[in-house]
Length: 367
Ligand SMILES: *Cc1c(COP(=O)(O)O)cnc(C)c1O
Image (cartoon, rainbow, N blue to C red; front, side, top):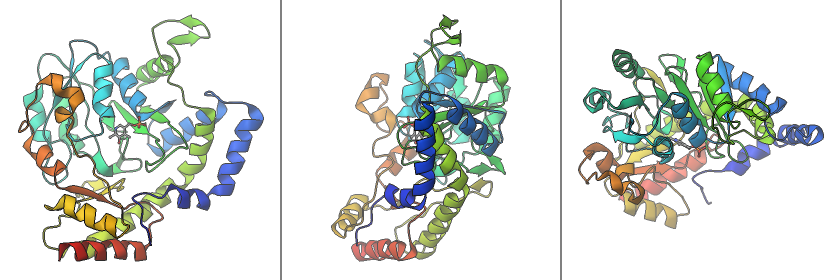
């Protein structure tokens, strides 16, 4: 039996008829760019996130970029984030012409080390971007306290954390804005690229609405220079269907994670993921650490079990960000973990026998 890292097809098959009907409705109404299906999704997703507003955009990258732009981040500014994230978090900062300033991560949660934020703040700091990595929320209370003390906006990168909670508050609803990606492999995935920003601030919501549509307040009347960052009608309709299943899919992911935890906890040299007592983890990826990471991945792939690495190279060591001049050793925890992490197969439809095979595979390679 082959076990893929991700299986989008099994999920599609479980909702095939609903999706077919939703797509047909878009085709019948020609509402292809923005329009009623996107608006219906925005209303439903805002409510799912306990927020007043949701603004559909073309991707998670655009959600973060337009959020920072709407907050006035520009050339000469600094934005604080982490080096162990998908590059989009940092690209969005660069797209504004600002400079990313990294802080190292916490050894237990793999998220931003909140004790390091204050030391990274300068007179140029314009925003803080915590990343709810792997589906586990950042410890947001200290982040919000520091942000408030220094009068800085907080842009939550919740692109991996749809439905995760921090002290019962949905990820994305705590900062100034929350940014989501609906890339197909995310917990809530479109059938193409899409993203959204959620917020309770009406002025920011309006600015992002304008920026995503060429800065126009009225058709062909442009107040500012914006971009084409709209969500497609087809993606809105598909996301409307899938949002109804998200809570159930997240519960399945949590059950799968518990099963992995139970079976892996006894294994020497394997560190299973932690769920802080303030958190509901939604396991966008299930990440373990093993010192012999590359051997383990190789051994599993020979048994037809496919894993991932999120992410093999911290952003400050990527070729694209060499110009920042940050040397190896700058962020020791992020750098150490990048060499040890493995993402095991994880999706809502993963079965217990499949998990059992993955665990047996790991045991075989390790002994
Ligand atoms: C997926 C992701 C993004 C970018 O989203 P896209 O929709 O692919 O543009 C940003 N940040 C994180 C942490 C992500 O996982």
